[in-house]
Length: 485
Image (cartoon, rainbow, N blue to C red):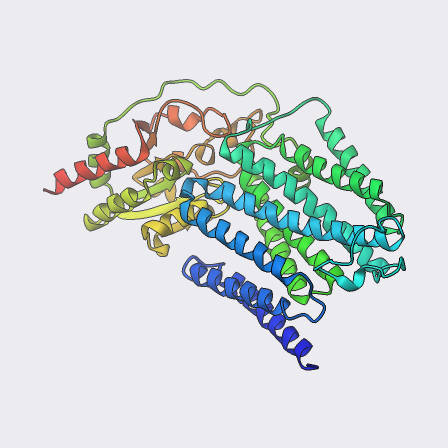
């Protein structure tokens, strides 16, 4: 069937087109759901086309692996709570990096076998059978392919181990930050050692001990790079490892000669890199600091905060907003924990019926992953034209009668502008303190995920409505309905 390779290439081209168009549609909340479906069909098409490659082996094992993966993803996707979505994204992203690293490992082992180092390994690679040598002859890997395979394996291994640490931190299994003196130097030495060993492998000095050392160093570097990262910077980390995984897949696609992997990995890597830059800008950090800095580490003793937190009850807060002209609602991770998004939208609708102008303000790194708050509000049915990003909404706060903060902490902390010793100093924030009145819904008087005291809570124009987010908003809804009765 001489026409089969052409059909497979055409399927890969169509799959790549669906990847790109799907990603484009994901750039807008209005079309994001459709974009995910498009990209999913592209992936399905690419997988099906791969089964018809003439040199494909072990199709039964591959089908079994696909079925297990689909079943696990379907089960976990259906059961995962919205609050656990960030760690799920981190885990799945790590699996992608690990898969790319595994491909690199297979190719390196095949190369070693071709040099006569692993004669006992059978010719059963389902990935690239022609790369495995026959009768001890050198494998069909060019110097460029070998170098790209090593580079993809390095990046994929770092993404895999780093994503697992990110998952464990978000899941609460590890402390938020782990630092020790000289940590940056240790990390740089680990990276340098991994690169040196990788260069040896890429230049043909392949041996089993060297392969094992290479992956050990890469995995350890991923662990050590992620351990000192604080929770407030986790959105940057997730987007960074997403870029790493995409790049690793693209490099391994070159090694396998698979166009779908090359295009999909390049698109994901480019998008992840741009997103990382946007997240770093939102945190006022450089990419170098993201890679090698001690995330969330302060530079001295923080300023003492004067004053006291002033409580307010739900009925008074409801009256304040019922007779306001403009209200801006700022959601944070606490809203996700309380699953309060539907109640918040119900409350906003009641205000809108009274003629109050309501908007939702989203900080770029609110929550635990990029777009976390947008997903929550979209789930509740909040219209997209009511959602404003930080740059657009900040000039409006001085004309806002009430800013309602629900479960947000670090992204509204004015110490980011006033205290050079604060770990978040220089980070752009939502200027809710410039509103005439601020109401903060919070479970208690503790600090946020980054462990930083918030000066906003002690401001003269701020009142604290203590309690679970959903219950507190429910009280606001009930009080507002009594006013309208």
